[in-house]
Amino acid sequence: MTPDDVEGSTYDYSGKHYILEAVLIPNMGHLSPNSACVLVREMIDYFFPDGFPPTSTVGMVNSILGMSLIILFLHYISRDSLPYPPGPQGYWYIGLPNSKVPSKKFWLTYTEWGKKYGDLIHFTRFGKHYLVLNSLQATRDILDKQARITSDRANAQLDHISHTEEITSLHPYSDKWRKSRRLFHQILRADATSQFRPIQTRQIHDFIESLRSSKHTLKDQISTVSQKIMFEAIYGLEISSNRDEMPTNSRETLDVDVGAGSIITPGWDGFKYIPFIQYLPSWFPNGQLIAAHRVLGQMTQDGANKPWDAVQEKIADGDHSSLIAKLLSRTDPENHEEIHTIKWFGATSLAAAADTTMSAISTFFLAMSLYPHVQSKGQEELNTVLGKGRMPTFDDRPSLPYIEAIFREVMRWHPALPMGIAHDSLEDIIYEGYYIPKGTSIYANIWAMTHDASIYKDPDQFIPERHLREDGHFDNINSILAYGFGRRVCVGRYMANDTIWLAIAVTLAAVEISGLPNENVEDYYGDGALW
Ligand code: HEM
Image 1 (cartoon, protein in one colour):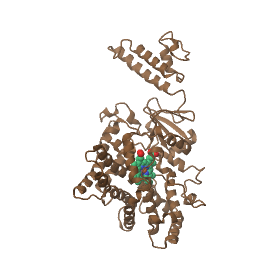
Image 2 (cartoon, rainbow, N blue to C red):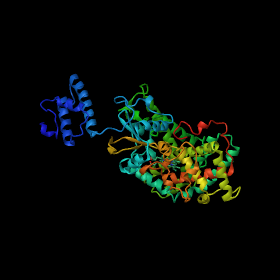
Image 3 (cartoon, helix red, strand yellow):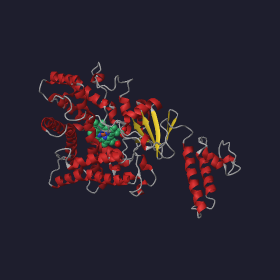
Image 4 (tube, rainbow, N blue to C red):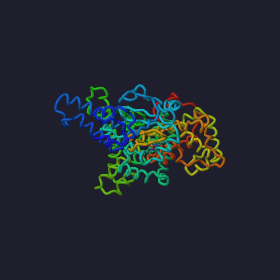
């Protein structure tokens, strides 16, 4: 190789030592891809003069050193000489250690870190890059405007063991996701969700009855109504409570998922990227995580199979009334791919809807308990518009602006997924002079955005009035940040809007909320991401 092979280079190519020198110099952005290839080829020649694989011990040591340097070199040239966004520094390869990765109420920590690092916070874990976006502007620029390259989901070897990749919310950006999302859209788009309103109405009225008589905790009852709506709407199945075998299964699946490195907590899935981790024996540090993924895999499968089998039994008995049965009746029985999509549409609906809906309704109860004057104002509006004793219906929604404002404030005050679900980047991104490498997990800190004091005065206070405008209009429902961004925005948001709005309106019309019974307020506004 001659100096001409490397464009604009100032190196002395008289000996092979230039390779080491080049590798150790971080700013390699001036190299063209061609020149980089030539350099890598030269490095291979240098470290493997007798060919590959090496036959002696010295050759083996040489090759390990050589491969490490080549990887380091490729890493540096891909940075295009721009810095990563600022963020907490970790150790080589390990990146940020466990003890430094926020796990409890992590959205608060990232909001606090934003004061030090700014709107973009970057860190690494085991070679995986993480980026937290603390401002709406940066989120719109990266997740909305660049949605074509920021709509992937992380997918590691362990996700095959846990089968979580079968859940639509966790599908990589692929044809499989597109097909599944199309099915969701067909059933849950704005003008289709009214089909579920009779179910939502009946279940929410039953919930009010249970509030008066049930011995279960309030949280259990809220969880029950959230799950009952989904089981009936999708599978046509009646469950008795959230402690039934089927829903408990989906609840526990989520718990195990969080423990096993869920992608709703930035950095916690980092260990999944340790090379060959799926082959570690269980006695090895982190080896138990593989076992946890196997358990998760069984639970994920059960969560999909049990309601599916129950529907098949109903179909065999001649009952074709459920949504799943209707979808199957339109599908060629030989089209196994389509049937698989329908099956996992059901499982995803349960997993994605139940706890998010529960979180929002719990937040409403907490707010009414802490802000009794808001409750009174809501009840006054209901009495004035509907007359005392009449239960609100979906048709009343446009004439109840204060109830609408309470709903909007619930969604702002404590979003169910305060940092959404990570979007992974499919290409390198340069933003505001920073380099965001391909494969970065990008989190929108929704909580930081809905608590931005420059937009929401006294953001920690529950103030529905902030949503009331003089012209009487509300922002489009799609502006609710709690539903996420870009092409992965929550596809169930219209159904969620209906359930949560009706639960708020009917509860206010029917019961007085005064202090939360027998439970710690923190249970409603707790450490978990979902509630
Ligand atoms: C309070 C209620 C809800 C909230 C706050 C919520 C929030 C979210 C968020 C933040 C995401 C991730 C968006 C992103 O990646 O940027 C999401 C995705 C999703 N949600 Fe919801 N959700 C709710 C209810 C529901 C319901 C009722 C359903 C279904 C019936 C549902 C189905 C889904 C699905 C399938 C996805 C994955 C979309 C995709 O990856 O393409 N959600 N949701």
